[in-house]
Image (cartoon, rainbow, N blue to C red; front, side):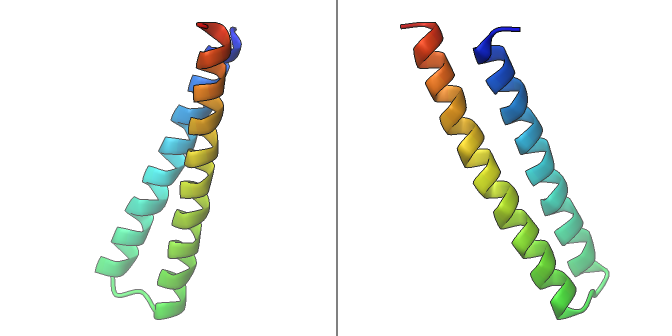
Length: 68
């Protein structure tokens, strides 16, 4: 597996984690979850968002290294 493909895999995984956190938050909100649960879900979303941004930066770096 090339470094670019590995970075793409990690980026896709980070996106899936972020999407899952968003769906869990939406379902909790619709179910009338308590405020502390919703706040914890928001924290998970932002942590996943940071992971997506880091994975995207690594993907760009791997692309530049592979295809320069």
